[in-house]
Image (cartoon, rainbow, N blue to C red):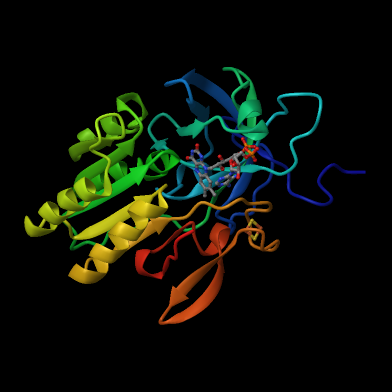
Length: 288
Ligand SMILES: Cc1cc2nc3c(=O)[nH]c(=O)nc-3n(C[C@H](O)[C@H](O)[C@H](O)COP(=O)(O)OP(=O)(O)OC[C@H]3O[C@@H](n4cnc5c(N)ncnc54)[C@H](O)[C@@H]3O)c2cc1C
Ligand code: FES
């Protein structure tokens, strides 16, 4: 039986003409050689893979569905979503920054340079920057910082200044500071010195609003920070975007595993994070 009866063949990154991916389809399954894979601290790894032109068209906030190797004797069911950390188009590389939390990411962490990663994407709806925004504020915590990191790339291309408020347990967990320093100001708010308190973060946001440095808000990774940005955004008429995380199975729309509730024009609405998100209008997001 031909090996591509039920699905198209995966495209091999770096091998033009390999596999098959319909031209009209913006996402594809790719086999990507691992170029580098290092720990950045005790919990997070930075993974760099060679990517195909379709993968390199990924937008900040979009994600890839990764087929993680098994870390043990069993199988890892389902792919795991990881948003792009950096898109290096000139060297045809895609980068991920991920926290090792369970079996999938433990298996992912075992990949070494020269191994191949099977990924599907780019998937979902990413962040957007309106042409009239000149100063935006990014506020996140934990893995949310990895998801928002490529906003720095988009801002750099558009000449937009970013104030990035990075909330973390400690200095070394305040990820992506180097990327945001290139396009604006980084403010680290830490549990270790008490600066991550809601009162302090609200003061910082209040100052930025008063100084007219908040044309738009972006957030990911914390319910409390999201609620704070949503409240201030509503009070001051500042548009916002939120990247939602949700456990996924197919990542493509049909299974409805990733549904969350949103409030749209006063009515509750169910939406799939994988195809209608993961980036949503901040005012429509509900807490968890
Ligand atoms: C669109 C999207 C983008 C993401 N981007 C990143 C990223 O850039 N970096 C990063 O470190 N993580 C990211 N995540 C979270 C990542 O997908 C999960 O950490 C991963 O799937 C866990 O797999 P596991 O098998 O290691 O853990 P599991 O054993 O499956 O679970 C371990 C813990 O992680 C939680 N978890 C599992 N899957 C998810 C999920 N999809 N979302 C949130 N929590 C989950 C579980 O509830 C459990 O508490 C993203 C998630 C989504 C939906
Ligand atoms: S993960 Fe299947 S519909 Fe979203």
